[in-house]
Length: 514
Ligand code: XMP
Image (spheres, rainbow, N blue to C red):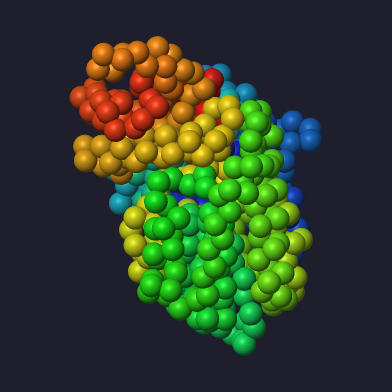
């Protein structure tokens, strides 16, 4: 596919995926590569521009991530951010030292609006700084185009060579006019057209998938989550009934969720595909009987999934392609793209490919961020309810029931959770809370209902706000809403006589209970 590309070179900073997202918000396609990537490989991609990210090191220290002078001599515009800015200056003959004053947080910056980088930006604006080192001397040929009270070189440029360095982080929303600055770079300086759009992604993908697959058979493991649903619909648009989707209902889904997935993807739904629902509830419950240790539960649920899927795959026989709903952060985080490698092993069902007889894996969403997957989903006409589904863990309610999982406990937590979600939606909070659900504690206590003594379970309500799910804070839900949820759960769900609201942030807690 011929498209304009901006390459982000990753030096290990925490905002690196954000840089790529912001560039894509300018409708310019962008990919992240580690600083270790061969320069010839980058050059061969023919990028319209290169952005060097921040990073945790000091660029003058031995062994620190670096780059060669040639990077700046390819005639491709380069923008260095934070560490990337310092590295550009150092490599080209400037000076970088430990700053006398460490800058951190929102800082007022004075910019030269005659610079193409700051065109249309207010002369005094607020930026996000986070650095210990600073540029003490610009490299030959550079002029300073921004400064703060403590940072003499907040930005510098060499217009003749199309090289730009910014000490702060325009990719972070706290930099009030950061998106404008990045758009000035990719559109104004690199000359990108900015015509990368989701409708063209869908259209191009459908075309490319059709060409690639031809008359081949394709198999997809459908979970009902956003990624696999969007991947399935994209494939269905491209190849119709050559696609078979297998949906395993492990009995640990939220209330009515299995039926909801079937309504969309099954024979009554709008899509042309072969849909197989495997009702494996009983199998899972018997495997989980007596198991209380969280990691063991996860393992059993994951392994059982492979087994169920394998049985179905055997019935279907050999296929040409297996679809996976991998998205761009998975690619970057598994260390294939960028530098900041964090592998979230527990988030993926390992081993699936081994149990299927196939020739090749197709990952149609491999280039997209989560919000872009959602946009593609809407573009494809997938119901909003599915597209904006909150994250739901693979092991499902298995890790929201503390202690042993039983069919009875699953019903309790499903009913309590359904009430909670209904009331949150009624209060208009469903779009503003990151993730919320009910969990079943393993605690039973004495209560009184009518004239009778009860000895029942306690339900815990969880609701968190989070940006990246790595850290989170308990959401502030109005007390009246919590009270309504509590009284409905106690009245409507048998087996529950207490309701708690979990105030714990992450860390020290996690979002899920196990
Ligand atoms: P924690 O509980 O680790 O959750 O704070 C962070 C995010 O990850 C989800 N999560 C999982 N997702 N398999 C998954 O697919 C899992 O085993 C798993 N554990 C946690 C959780 O829902 C939250 O969004």
